[in-house]
Length: 129
Image: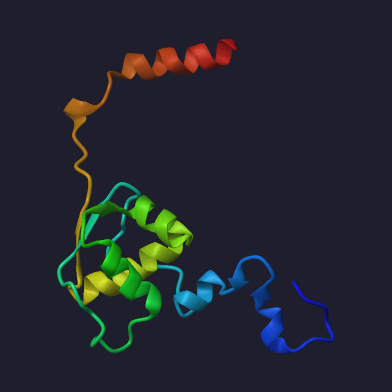
């Protein structure tokens, strides 16, 4: 980062990374999505190919719609955009509220979970280490 005597514009530029934008600036200061919970493995797909005409969307919103032309998980979107998952969840909430993305939450089925005894054995094994 730059020294104190330099302009405010230069303070928001990192020599190696370029412009630095804080995550709360991307979401307008919001920490929670307007709709949805968005698990890390929730699958997201765009419902439209072009959202350039939509007002109120930032470049990150447009980037998510572009990425989600193929199905991606919330974690993958965050990795592609190099943004924190919490920030991506807020942006996905905006897009879901406008019906620009469709989100499929993971199904929680008791049949797919291991027996309680397996968890106990793992815990006991970890304690023995």
